[in-house]
Amino acid sequence: MKAIILAAGAGTRMKSNLPKVLHTVTGKPMLHYVIEACQNADITDITVVISKNGEPVKTATPHSVKFVEQAEQLGTGHAVLCAKDNIDPNDQVVILCGDTPLITSAFLRKLFAFQETQEAHAVVVATKVPDPAGYGRITTSPNGDFAAIVEHKDLSATQRNITDINTGIFLATGSELLYGLARLENHNYQNEYYLTDVPKILKSTGYNVAVYNAPNYSEFLGVNSQKQLETAATVLRQRIIDKHFENGVQIIDSTAVYIDAAVEIAAGVTIYPGTMLQGNSKIAENATIGPYSQVINSNIGKATTVRNSVLENATVGENCQLGPFAYLRPGTVIGDHCRIGDFVEVKNATIGNNTNAAHLAYIGDAQVGEGVNFGCGAITVNYDGVTKNTTIVEDNAFIGSNVNLIAPVTVHSGAFVAAGSTITSEVPKNALAIARERQVNKKGFAAKYKKLKTPPKSKAKQNKAIKENKESKINP
Ligand code: UD1
Ligand code: CA
Image 1 (cartoon, rainbow, N blue to C red):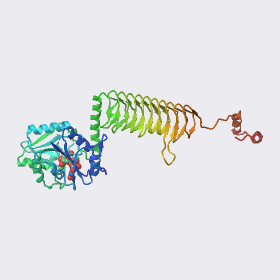
Image 2: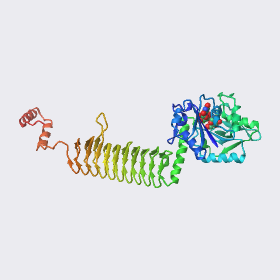
Image 3: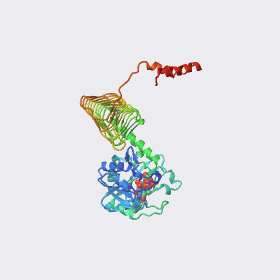
Image 4: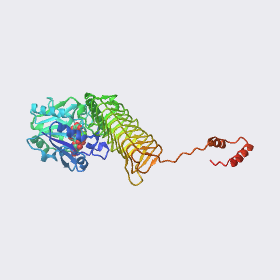
């Protein structure tokens, strides 16, 4: 069994510069779903037909497939012809469209079995849809046999009511497929060489063309517009959610949770509403994510809690408390038993076990050891206007509130940095660093100052106040 996937169409109805098949559904390009369905049905020989502008499709597709180019988009039949060098007369060839991301390997296996039991030279896959607009329709001869597929634009007024549609999936033996393709004409509304005319040609030549009536139409949704892309995403989201339910993940309100196809979630995880788990994120057992959190390509360790936070390309260890309102940017690696609390931003930094930054901190371009405490408002000053510099904070150091650590700088293990300090040079091991103006108390000054600032009641009092002021020689 070989597969040919058609992906050269312009996709004009998407009104987007991106090739249609690269539009993503639950974080994955549509084409990849179709390729992976084939691979999971044990098809290893897959040819993808792309247009001459299809370079981005090649680049975005790491799968082991062959690409052939259709220089001009003269129709789906012409597209298959472009792959004819890969079709051997003895092959079984299944043709799929790159814009049908809901296709499953389970369906493909059933289709192959059907062809075998029917001993069919070709199989058309039909289904019934509530709204057939836009699809090719299956017409039958008076005895109920398959007659032809009529494209939507070529339908007569009465044919428009037919709800049996062509899913776009077609299976044929190589020799018959090549026979049909060689006889295609483009005398139709769109002046295109329709693949969908091949079964009609084979049938009228006397070949056995069978129709496989698929019960579940939602597997065959063809995405031609942004609206259909969203419809496909709704179906795929539900499939993903059902898989996680099956695996023992607790999702509080699945209508308010978005999980990409490749995300891995262990049993015992709880996901609260407003959460988006994206890319290749991995969530370990008993973690709690949400409400209102976005996790992009990040790993979250066992029993860690993430509330109202955003993580991108970050790794967080076990038993950590994140948020509310933490922001972990790319390159963040956090150990176990850490607390990264409200309004704490971490970027390109490693943070050791048992380290806390409970509120209002910025840790960027830093190596922070174990058991460190970052006080409220403590920040690394990592950017000097030209380059980014590294801050090193060793194990068990204590960084007081509102401290500026001006990088490059190192605070050695066990050191204390007093609140409000601006640290520009190394702090030795176990030392106390204070780098701030010494406090001065002016006795009784507050009361005098207040009196001075109080508006006088009359001209006479005003003059008296001016006089007193001169006498007191206080210049606040
Ligand atoms: C096609 C079928 C229609 C079916 C529907 C199911 C034809 C003529 N029509 O219609 O019967 O009901 O799919 O979704 O086959 N493509 C190329 N080269 C081309 C033209 C198209 O590679 O020259 C590719 C497209 O990228 C797409 C696929 O073929 O992946 C189908 O083309 P599209 O224009 O979407 O056909 P539909 O009008 O949806
Ligand atoms: Ca289509």
